[in-house]
Length: 319
Image 1 (cartoon, one colour):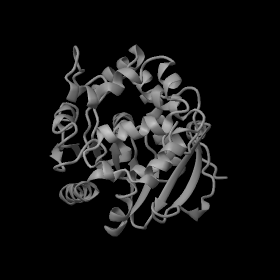
Image 2 (cartoon, rainbow, N blue to C red; image 1 turned 90 degrees about the vertical axis):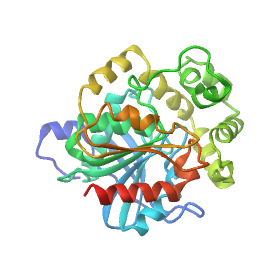
Image 3 (cartoon, helix red, strand yellow; image 1 turned 180 degrees about the vertical axis):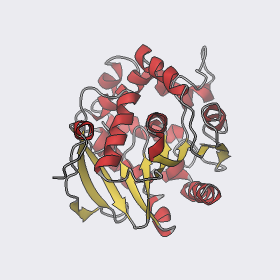
Image 4 (tube, one colour; image 1 turned 180 degrees about the horizontal axis):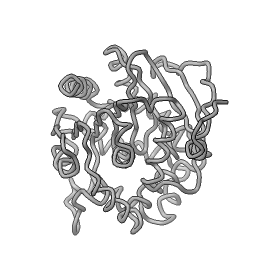
């Protein structure tokens, strides 16, 4: 056990557990699995490679394997990849509460401290979907911990323009989850026992390159989504973010400018340039736009090469 000098740090962070001495089976590549306890919650994460670390945050309803095609590319570029399953995701704990973004920011801060990634100058963070919500909340609360921030294929709760009225069919396919996931009880009632059917339909309708969610990946997503508490936890992110308290948090958070370089990317068949336009109102060094012709919402799976190239170019330009 490591003793921290600061009592405040002791209160916020628990000690990392040793890594599990095994690697993930094919086809997800060779990664080391770890568990760390932060704020009383066990967080699962994986690592691969060596070099300067980069932290990857997945979106809903995925887990660390959302980045399975990006990890080897980043490792080849000389980076050590850390991929975190946030609260309620994958093989991390799924408590009843704590899915508001202020708590998520504290979770991520605690994770960086416990894994000794809170180094001077900060760490590069790359995020997707709900992972963007977490990454933005953390960057606003702990800007000294973020060297450069990449956000992909998401909105920003309380900041992005909401869908008004009855949307078109195309818009509805992209945005239905924001209304559905916030309903009390009904999503759990409809999804329980039909997790495979639910995820199969979701991936099919939100991807352009549907083959990018290969059978082994779907099996793994179904495995973790079927675990007790996972579906509830996933819906809880939406319920908390768009609740009156969540929107009040977002309003306060929007007043904290992001000073670090930010790359905001949307898929051409996803949010397009919308994320960059939104984040440009929040940061001082924001670039990005739409990438990936023929790419849908699940950008890290559908267009890993284009996404990796854009991120590496951004890092080179913003050293």
